[in-house]
Length: 198
Image 1 (cartoon, helix red, strand yellow):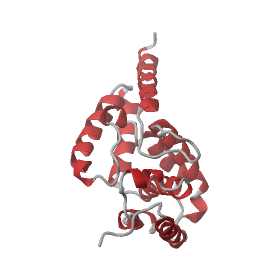
Image 2 (cartoon, one colour):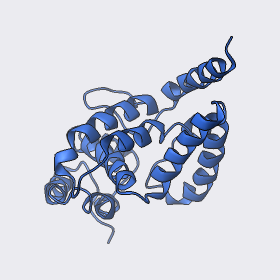
Image 3 (cartoon, one colour):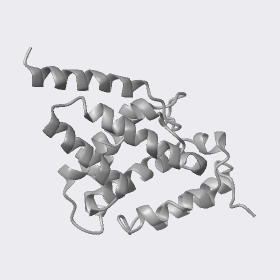
Image 4 (cartoon, helix red, strand yellow):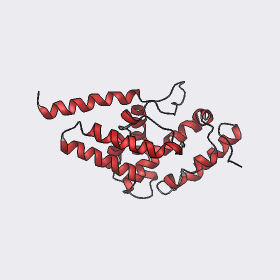
């Protein structure tokens, strides 16, 4: 077998494991947790749909590439609830090691490119990475708003924790934040989301 094709085959078959990495979010209308592969597909479509809402023009092809690779290291690191700040440093180390191992399965030039995409997403240095990171935070909010806050309730999440996403979402999508905030307050009123800490 062609060595480069063999490496690509090994990589893409390794990605099968991403379908088994369960996230902390539930798909709207389903009584199960979504997996990271489903999440990556859905946020790519959300990103394509949100271009007109962005605060500046976005290279959507580049943003989509980042979104497609951003959770691949979870094959090794697993998923950690974004609001579990006690796990952030350890998770960052695990994801870096996972990124290096998994992208290292590819032919060197391709692996280096994917690792660079993952790093850009992680650091948020380009507008496209900030766009991708905003979409990544937006989708779980929408899932909880439209599914009765199941993940929020399971993890005792408060509105002030969710409002912390403003710094990531509003600069990229300035026209939607007020709508989101109104929906979050409605979620508190319905009992889907805990009020702010006293």
